[in-house]
Length: 553
Image (cartoon, rainbow, N blue to C red; front, side, top):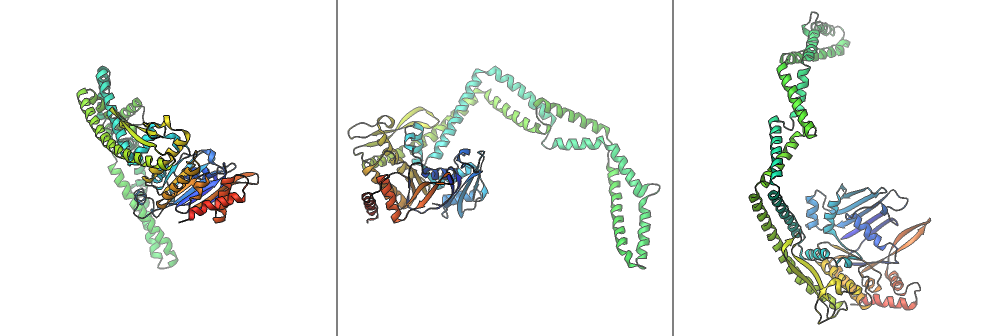
């Protein structure tokens, strides 16, 4: 359930902090007051695309934060834990700067938009005011049926298997039609792979080779410098260490005469220890330093060969192992393509995998189609379409497609005794609104989200039908949190709670304001929705009666 929404500098909202209740809530107000802006702000927090236009004029950035309740043991809690987000609550935060750049957080940790959208699937289901128009498209009808069937993941798997099948089909045809060109490319790749394999160049080899080459190339200088240092310390004609050791011994003896020399004597002794260790290290280095001109020449030749191959493939030397892997993969692909029989076998297996998944999807769709058809037909009777009938038709596609082995079409008849026809051809504007609303309400019942939002989905209806819609939404609010942006007093009167959104002008700027309505405030707002500009005692009495009917047992 949505518990809190904080909005800063979003369109015409400067700052709003809203606390939400459960049940069915209505958001009302004059057109253009900013009702849908609240829905847009929430959509931004849930991962919708950002646009610099959402930043309020004069502000540096827009910010939206939405806090949702997380039930222990829920699918949302499991998802949060799996993605290393703390699971006690779910706070989605989004910031959009004036340049259009967007950043996102989930429970205080940086998140991707993909993660916000994944979380949104568990949290909120938003139905826009033009959603019923999208139902005229075949892809929207198919998506709604799949959502109702809980088969979205299966539908994605079918699309992936279809793509894999078609890719193999295309590869087989290409192999059959262009054998000569494939052979030439395969021959070139084989030569390139062998050339790189002969080089024997591993991921760490370049750095190690360069380091060894530098050491050998400067071996004479290194030997000379280490020998000179060793002569100065211990092996030259006038070595420093014996003299320093003698001086250190004399200082140590004299500390018995004057203890004040103790600190200096100790420091002198420590320095001697360091110098002695330095001499030992120099001897080891000198004794193991190798002047090997043959090895140096070998390394120079190897570096030259690596550099030439890297230049040939237009990459840095250290990237040659990656080039080799890419060439091997392409060679393996072409080797397979050179055998159309093997390709045909893989193509057949991919086709069988696709058909198996598509048949399973079709079974789920047929089951859901029956349920959805019956539920929407029943809702149509309540929505003043007595005798109307809704049907989800599944037409077989023998060859199959990315979306499965059937085409899906919503059919409807508004009057008894008439055969159902495509929704786009027979439904009037008002009928489409009612059917679309019924579909959205019924589809929401199968959605996992705990919060359902309807943004002016009741456009095009009124009177008794509006009251029925209000009761439908109220019934949804028994088990879910339902928020509805509406202009209809019949719908608002059925709500458990109501907010009024209005515009104010402050310091020459137009800003949106939200008021939580008490019982008296609801009467005034419903009366405004009924009577327009002039609110009379009659409209107030009518509003009181509508709210009284809502409160009656």
